[in-house]
Image (tube, rainbow, N blue to C red; front, side):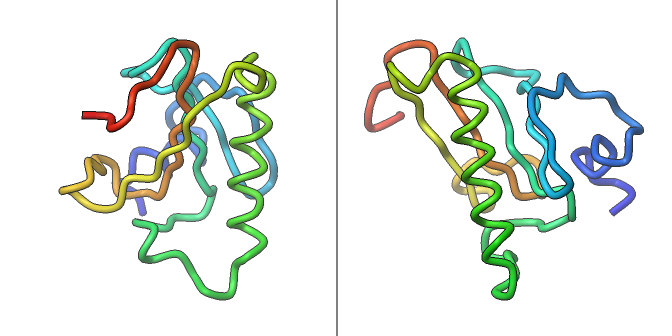
Length: 114
């Protein structure tokens, strides 16, 4: 996916502010944060949306959630709380079509989000 922004980050063509990385996932600070802490967690392989997540990869799903938990803890959010969000397609607000999980915190978050 040569045109995918997040694939370019995984390939090293664009340098994100990385906060966590494994062989399967990458987590970095969002360049347009919606909270004091706003980190994106992505699979390193290109998966366009949550609907495109392969059925045969439950380990990758677990690794994405584990990464979210770890970046929240290392960012000091575990005690006060944080939100995780996956937007799927345009009506939900997905702007980059590479699956990504938002980790948001550092202030009181309201529900519904608006």
